[in-house]
Length: 172
Length: 172
Image (cartoon, rainbow over the protein chains, first blue to last red):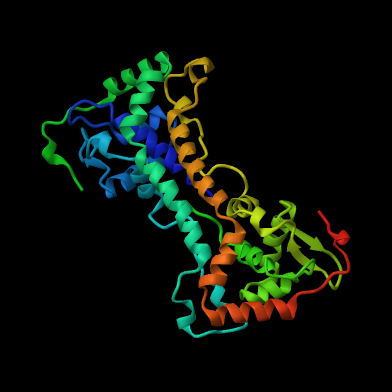
């Protein structure tokens, strides 16, 4: 089972954006610098978060990204599904139907018990991710993170955040 | 998040092997036929299950595979980890350390809170998979499966199972 590397980058960026003030934004290039990532690599994931309406993007030279809603209403599940897609991890290929004995489709009305069990486990995974809010991640970091790391992160956001005139420039 | 296609094949084969009698075996080719899969494709996954000691393989022309222990003591987690590897789905790349402000390693002694939250969700997933025993899958199929499908599966196993003289021929 694998999650793409983009998930880590996406969550870190969202957590950083939780720290910008008001309707200010951070440029993708600034977040790429903050995490030592290629800006083009990161842009792909930031656009996925924007498409899922987790982030808002403000276009133009002074633009960037900001959270589309409060961090309390963004879960790790929202971010994972935005980046990885909404398909379950287990994809039932209905191989039960492929064998030498071909039965009528009516024999397969009930879902395969293997798929049922795998999807049940995935619901447990998703429920745990849904419980983990971006605000919890940020609050735990603020309370328990290394003070040097915290100070460096806050200074970085303060230095790079870009105030916006109004929030009406948001794009879907 | 994705699980490889081999997981479905591996669980189906293990469930089919739960139906063989005594120390009989099923050949990989028979299971490939049962699920309409390429024998060489399936062999790879059967060997992973054998390496994880979920299956035993009996070599020779009359050999094949059987469960290495009762289906009650084989969980879907055992099978998923055998096929997919034991690494967590979320691989923390420690990108928090990559940015423009390089701090001493002592600033990162505590694990990243994002990794902690992702691993917590993975524990929920694994716990649900560990609870799902192969014997439950088989019992539910026996109780609720389509009778035609059940009859065809049982007949297939009866026709293809290969009795073995003793259980001492097992290989790791």
